[in-house]
Image (cartoon, rainbow, N blue to C red):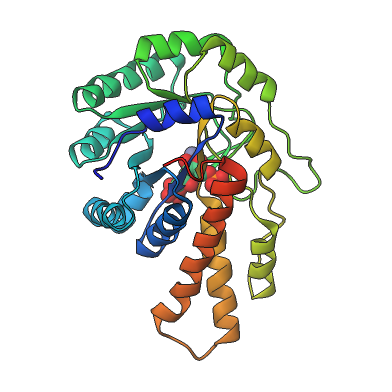
Length: 311
Ligand code: G3H
Ligand code: 13P
Ligand code: ZN
């Protein structure tokens, strides 16, 4: 099975009322944990690479690891650039074999976002690659850029048709109250998402795939394990699984998860070292970390995304 784009995946997900998990990858153990879970659950997958991940591991290492995962699992896997911020970065990923790119022009004016996104779409489509655009701006940290709550903004449903028509994007990320990182809501604050905005967008763009970023649930158990084993994380609050399930049944076809993977890995490693302070073989502590990622992803595929058995 070769790498695939997300086109067919999204069509089936839209019609079937489920979503595809887009998991951020940075190294072999993360890729193995995710793909082993998807293999056991027979789930389609998007593995996404941020520019930070690409700088950390190098494009070629991540590509080869993902190719190995495809050979190992025989699953439909799409490899996607997460939060591309320039045409050059998107072009480099397209030329390097990615099947999908995101051009995140959400920090620009509406007009400049359209211009940049259209430029990427033209190049991508000429090379058989699909494009995700973004309208609205999420709060939180991505690639060391911190968008404050004051600078974040919900997607305006009145702009989505013009944006999609003028750019030709294949999917659209919208801002409805999710945010990047582990601190999505303030302590004591009740998590809330603007499902009314999602419904309006859905009405404006019938049949069109919508993407939800910043969708980690920030599993409390992992934060507890981290803090019980020497960590010092302040109160971390994520998106409740029930809300993600609701989103997955709607036009949302892609749900982005990174922070939960980081927490699963860190919790496992901290616990391991607390229990085995004399160990120093990376295989010993990375093995349970990989297993923890696998268990987390299995739960997401079955109970949150509903894409198990859909490969
Ligand atoms: O949205 C951001 C993702 O969590 C990727 O994070 O840019 O630190 O790799 P990163
Ligand atoms: P989280 O930080 O909620 O995992 O979001 C990840 C994301 O949106 C990657 O693009
Ligand atoms: Zn994101």
